[in-house]
Length: 319
Ligand code: FO1
Image 1 (tube, rainbow, N blue to C red):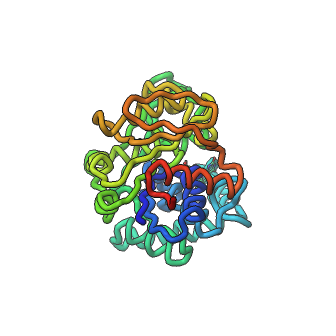
Image 2: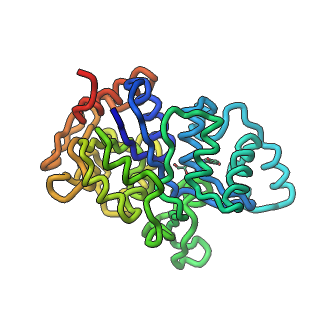
């Protein structure tokens, strides 16, 4: 069985871990958002690819959900001592090795997909880790500049980390997306998948960015397997990933129903065949098989059960 998962960072990584537990014999491909990628201190950083790689490779810091377990921050402190901006980004000493290897390979001309495969050799994540695109796509956020009051675009990471998404955003811009193509293997994986799952990642800046790469949306719609989404909104609030700060920016109601309708029914030109909402949440999404199941990934067992529910909804799970 071949399962393809569209994923962002923390939520996507945790879901993938549960999926591998629920379907240990399945071939799993993760198509991961690269819109959060950023170049800082001369290093190319890919937060979502690294979060998935570290989580599945058992190197993640579980409390933060990102970066390495047992991390130290000596270089970050030394950079701050020089006043080298930005000082707001958490650059861990162990994590820097990943960025150094990635940056050196990118500078040598290797595409991001080759770099990701090389890094994954060490971590053995147990899934095929595919960047959504080898071309650079960066999510920037248009905010009213606190000093001048005029609109200014800042990198998503600055909005997310430095400003904790507290600056009112008027729009998200995926810089470079018009020239981006699906990464190697992405369209083929979607075409041959027995099931396609939208992980419970941010539907705007994670799943939305992946779907925004020209060609990916059509590949999902053409998938032979069923397409199952998992709501990142439970009882009207985002669990993590601040989806509730992003959805209003694109005019989507902050509810499981709102997000389900945003993705739309594949039979009506949208993307979904099934939509998982949290037990107790109501959602009607015309043309979509809506199922209420526990969505909280509060333990490995709960996450595995969620993954099993997604497979059942895709009609791909073991009977
Ligand atoms: N998130 C934070 O809230 N603060 C940080 O300082 C931070 C640093 C960081 C470094 C590497 C990395 O791979 C992720 C990092 N993240 C940090 C998380 C990251 O901003 C988010 O996980 C994604 O961009 C959103 O999905």
